[in-house]
Image (tube, rainbow, N blue to C red; front, side, top):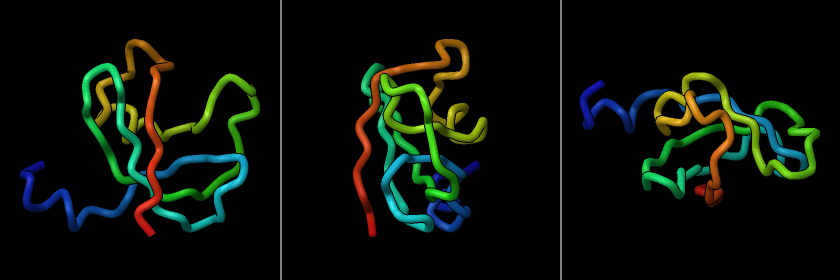
Length: 78
């Protein structure tokens, strides 16, 4: 996807234990500094050691599919 069309693409799905549904957050992979905009649409993760669950689309954009779990920063954009 071209960089100028990324801003108009709908945010990928994600799950968080406490953030309100519909919240938009930027998730940054701290291993490679790639980031993605996601919308909170579910509850979880239920593993206490994890902060957020991401859709496959978001995980692909963060280049974390192979690792599965990576350190991330979560920032509200609303």
